[in-house]
Amino acid sequence: MNRFMRCMVAVVFTAYLVLGGSSWALAAQDSWVISMYMCGSDLESEYGSATGNLEDMQTIQLPQNVRVVIQTGGANEWHTDGISSDRLGRYVYDSTGFHEIEQLPDANMGDVTTLENFLRFTKENFPADHRMLLFWDHGGGSLGGFCFDERYGNGLSLNDLRQALNTVETVNEEAPVYDLVLFDACLMATIETANTLHGFSRYMAASEEIMPGTGTDYASWFGALAQNPAIDGRELGKVICDTYLPYCKANESDDMATLSLIDLSKLPALNGAYERLGQEALRQSRQDPKAFFTAFDRVANNVEKYGYNEGVDWSNMIDLGSLAQEVEGLESAPAFNQALQEAVVCRTAGPYRRYGMGLSGYYSLDGMLMTWLDYDALHGRSPAFARLYQEMLSGSGDGVPWYYFDIESLENAPVVLDEDNKAAVYLSPEETNSISRAAFLLCFYDNDNRLVYLGSDEKLNIDWDQGAFREDFDGMWPALNGYFLPMYISEVNKDYILYNSCIKLNGKECYVDIAYDYDKEEFKILGAQRILDNGWVDRDIIQLKAGDRIVPLFTDENNEEYWGEEFILDGEPVLQDEPLPDDTYAFAFEFTSAHGKTAYSEAIHFEIVDGRITAIK
Image (cartoon, rainbow, N blue to C red; front, side, top):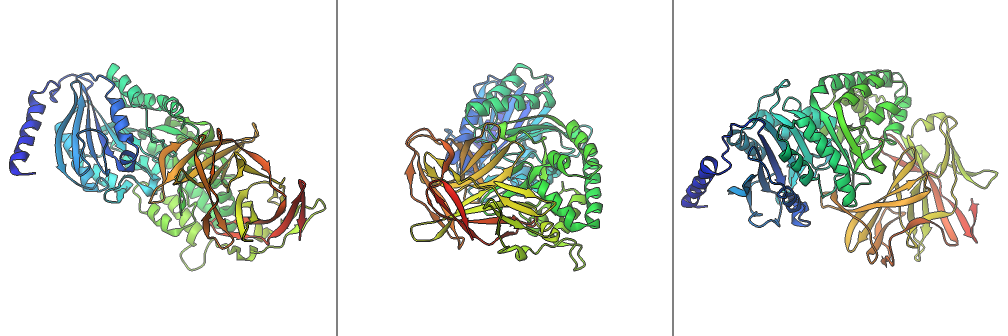
């Protein structure tokens, strides 16, 4: 931009502020300014999701004392007329409409300096009685951060957010500068995020789970604010929370949707209770590390886990309330859950996320010390749990691990056939204490006589006390409109189990989330999500439909992946257990340690002939 154009922009900007019909020097009480940091990413360039939310927002006529200040960037293409992809844009939406304030040179929306500049700009030019900060884009939980700029290839971390706020604002726990911070981004309802914002905001609204690309119901909550600008951050947050699930349902994306509103003034009490819980767990772990960490990991892997990512499997975020509730022998757990209940103002959730309590936190689902290092570097981490997980992963630091499980001894563990011709494995107490999860792996032989994984399932009878693992396979496997899918367990809950399957859907690689409801005795396809280049799953939830082209992704015995044969859904998608065709199959028990290491028993074969299953040693 040349000097003349810069001057003209400055003149227009000044005229807008001083002379415009929505003069920013408002004396009216209960004025609101919403600062919207909108990193478009592929959500905008491919789907126009940011544009859709901007359009929804503009269906509401705002009063003079409510304004939205928007910064756009981070997308290869914008679908809103006038928003450029090669510059940062700043806009205001107010009682007179949607206005451009200025165009800035291109910059990385995932850089802390860009965020600092925006926060300073809104603070200096748009004072108000009530201030709200809104982040719009992808989110990756406490470790993954948020606002992933697809032009520059990186995003903001929680520490970046804390730094930006510290640079521009002053910490004030009694009177924080923001009434509410909303993350219209995945996986950000974490205790670490809440601690990052403590002292800067009164409330935080965010989702524990992947957030559908449609986001929050902007028309509804902007309408509530326009109708009553005297509303405070708590009440506005409740409106956002209460309208979220119906909006997701209208967009066929409610099955795993969650949204929580957190009272950040309750964090000192909650953090205190969390530390006491971590300290008690640490003391108990040192008495018998192997037994404690195995039991702890069994619980952690069977509460709600959030954010499946390719390669690392999970974002390492689990529901903290469920963890405390289910772990046995921790006397401080009820006090933590009481503090959590007082901090979570409201939580809404779909039917297959009904057990979460509103706030997630780090747990090493991947068993990797590298991700623990990311956690330990966070401002919002728990010192006690950081130490607990360090010892879980790497020992006491003196060269003698507190907890080390070499489950290689379980490779090719012998399988026996019982009197009912059922396969079983019997482990010693020491071997049983080295594993936290068990399932079975089913394989078939393809036309090239290659052994191919069909998937994992939990049809086992397990006696942890006796170390007895017995298969209860019935010869059935899930088929989509008659075509068998590779399916793997992702989570087991009290009355439903979650699976994922990798497919190409109309040429795009996707994960399909699937639930099996024990009470209904039926499967439900929850939706497909495209896999992004960085391994995250997309926010856009796709419902399968007649005419879709499906190609399943299989893995063979050498862990090499290959695509199966394409089929077309010849009607509405129906997933149901169907008898496997007569053939010879392979079967193995799958054992996993708390470090995420997996071992397989010896494989046995069984034949299905006329529906009758016969195991063969």
